[in-house]
Length: 223
Image: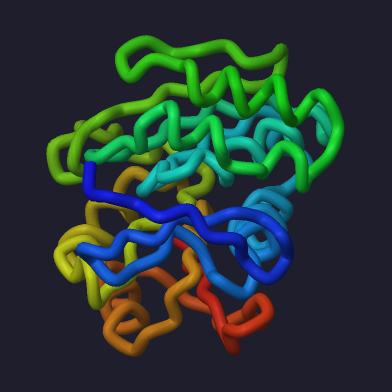
């Protein structure tokens, strides 16, 4: 793993800065509020209530913030979530233990869930609650075998297209389009022109949505 520097974002939550890539894991304007808007409000809340068991794929597990927000939401909604996270370069546990997401979110439940997420292995699924199972996969996305029409929702949270251009391509989005169920959605923070064109070429219908503080627009793509 590359060297990281812990930083506090404008909403009080942490992010990590990677000097070697000149890239942050989250928005410096607010890590927590970015994840809540892009992935929970634009993504998870957009899955119809009639679907009582949701399969979620996260591309770019990173700090585990999206997983933490999702497990909390699964209990609120009383909907079972099967969560698959793909990450080729996991962050060391001792670094994750210093991140303040549970404190900023509040409540002892968040502390317990975040500890379980970080302690979950990279081979076997971990049962975090009656409503949430997480499977963490340490691999590059292109090396992961995904079944056709497997997922209802994809959190696409890789490093930006300027840093990891190989992940923001028509070929990758075509692979993800295939593994989504009909009417499944992919949400991401990037609204770059090349990303929109690649999603459309892969077969998605895209929507530009209002972004979090510091970002004008984000994307939701539907199969």
